[in-house]
Amino acid sequence: MDDPAEFGRGLARSCRRRGDTMNPAVRSALRRGWCPGALRPMATGDGLLVRLHPPGGRFSAADLSLVARLARDTGNGLVDLTGRGNLQIRGVRPESHGDLVAGLIDGALVDPDEDVGPYRLTLVSPLAGRDPTDLIDAAALAGRIERLRREIGGLPAKTSVIVDGGGALSLDRQAGDLRLMAISSTHGVIGLPDGSWFGPAAVEVLPGVTELLLGRLAERHRAEPELVRRMRDLARDELAGLVAPLGFGRTTAPPGRPRPPEAGIVSEPGGTSAILFGAAFGRCTADQFDGLAAIAEAAGAEDFRLSPWRGFAMTGLAGPDLALAEVAKLGLIVAPDDPRLGVRACPGAPACSRGEVAAQSDAAMFARAASARLAGGMTLHVSGCPKGCAHPGIADVTLVGHDGAYHIVLGGTAAGRPMARLTAANITSALAGTGDIGPNLQGVSSS
Ligand code: SF4
Image (cartoon, rainbow, N blue to C red; front, side):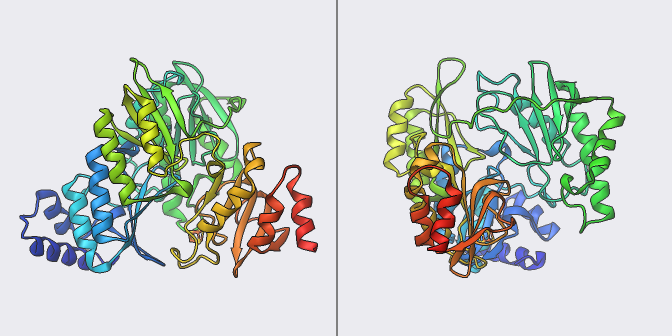
């Protein structure tokens, strides 16, 4: 399906079947032979996976209804929320892919003029632009950076820029190639992946700074595409050398902020409120999307925004309590102390063909067992294999699927060195209770 010509033929067949006159965007996509992103599906264990990258991670209620219908009609009815604020429609049948793409283009959920990734450069908090605790309008800054995206050719597909307004919805835990962080209403600092910080820089120059730094990354990627895929692939000296000509000195890292609330009610300027809620391990159903669209319409919500912690914000609400209660009825997570919010888990087996364990169902079991530890702030990552898709960063405990059991990594990533190999049952008993988890895991591994 990666074959552009086959994509075009499939889409044309779908339009003919539907008796549609192709809209100009679809026709343009066909002329160019292929479309990327949502239009270039990936084969997984449960069928094709189609990823959507909505600008700013935003959707209307009508958009959610459309995604629900397409996910049901062309896929297996499951939709995943990713850690980068994207949506993935799962289980798409190859013969239905053209119908899905045509529906997405018709609904303006896919830009047929895109070439190759990155499809969205920036990651912002779900309330960027309407969070009274933010120091700047991070959505506006991110919008200016997005407009540069096509100017900088040849960026690696996964390039990302964290744009943090400096408020309560901290993005400290999100990984990115560059980090722009507001420290006042007029200035920000620039963070590099080696943990170094530069600045302060006036907010209005940050898009230009970003363009220069990412332009250099693109150059290096073009020269050594296999070796340089992310900013972190550049040596420390080279990273520092990139910033030196810009005239900013090194500065101290901004103070860390508490983990952001992932569920609950947040006041907005102007007297309305937003509600934040999560989906367990990022997994939603088409029925839940339909339910959310109905709640938003009844409540007069403004829009939905995907969060980088696999949840949503529903904004512009006059009656947030009622809306949150209705969202709870859909089985989504509305309590900030729900232990599942402290667990990152990928689809695992059987949905992912590389999965060596049933990561999602095991994660639900582990979350229940570890509720006291998770409430105390422990982070837990359950990964179906060493690729670590659900969480590229460090977690207190990372469980990596291996031949039906788990390798245990403490204080590392899914690619880290394991200290033990345990079954799911052993891990469940070790996670219960409180105290230092290391000796517990050692205890069950030696018993
Ligand atoms: S971490 Fe492995 S099992 Fe999980 S989604 Fe990624 S590739 Fe699949």
